[in-house]
Amino acid sequence: MDVDRYRRRLGDDGPAAPSVETLTRLQRAHLRRVPFENLDIPLGRPIVLAPDALFEKIVERRRGGFCYELNGLFAGCLLYTSDAADECCGGGGGGGGGGGGG
Image (tube, rainbow, N blue to C red; front, side, top):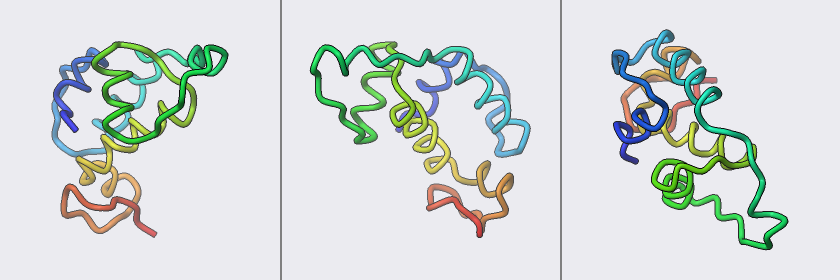
């Protein structure tokens, strides 16, 4: 995932250092800049939840999405930069991994 392009889509130019503040800022930016929409469903278009498809739809085509799409892209960003998620959620760190905690 091209996290820099995703951040540009969100209008985020704040520090990228993994922290709770970064995670909070990205979540708020995502909620403000990426609309909920489900236009593909009534148009009969397939819903593809693969990370590349989500990135292409939401970042490259500047569309919105429905809950699975929006949360899937945000989760993909967190997994790609998992230190921020680990710090917030108590996971093991290590970057680029599985996030989580537990």
